[in-house]
Image 1 (tube, rainbow over the protein chains, first blue to last red):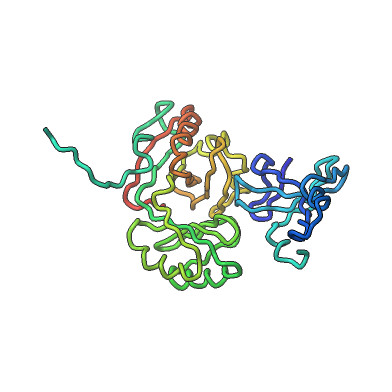
Image 2: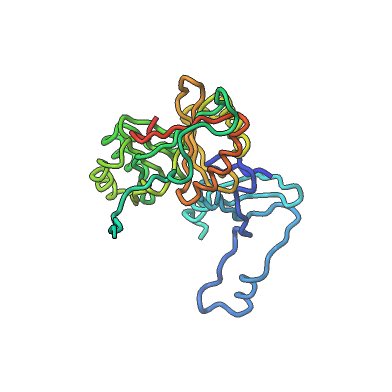
Length: 91
Length: 210
């Protein structure tokens, strides 16, 4: 599998480390219920299809990336810097 | 009883690792390696949103803009090398003389002197791409990796920063920079990979720049 880093270009997947789902939302502070925190910490979707996930380009530019990958065939449709997402309104 | 001399003295990153001479196959060397010593090096990391302004300041001082893609921009006294989004290496011909420049840039960037933190070498020769192909996962064909292109990648699990210089008398030329603490491992990869072609090694203590 090759990931096209928006900074470095197409690189072998071994240059990257996988973290997991990109769109987890931490429940609001101390007010969160135990069940909501348990969901946030442990529960993960396991889709057969499109998945947005975090990858770290550790052997390259050291940027965190959000990769949109089809889990059935590893086809990657989008790679964007996680930083851009954080700076956006979707907080 | 002789007194033991105790003093701080600069020690080359290559000391005890590699020396001038020929390694591997005898005869005309397929690869030429020049171990670089004595260059000055600093990392620049722009403040968020401040990359363009930093680049303008660098251009005013050094006549070179900071590249926004993986490139090396050579200048008269310093080279600017992309090393990540909003991050660069600034390399000087000499270790001394960059102090006031770096201090003035520190108003706009996180600046950190790395002169002793990296080991660098310049590679050229007819078989240079065949040697690099044993460790570099990138396509270094002239059509894919042009003069001035730079890349952060790994060789034998060692993080490297490499770029292509202007062609020299023996063809394409590359420079590779590795963390100083990894240079022993890097050299064991390089020496083994270059052996079949024969490698002529020299040391450039004067400038450290091509």
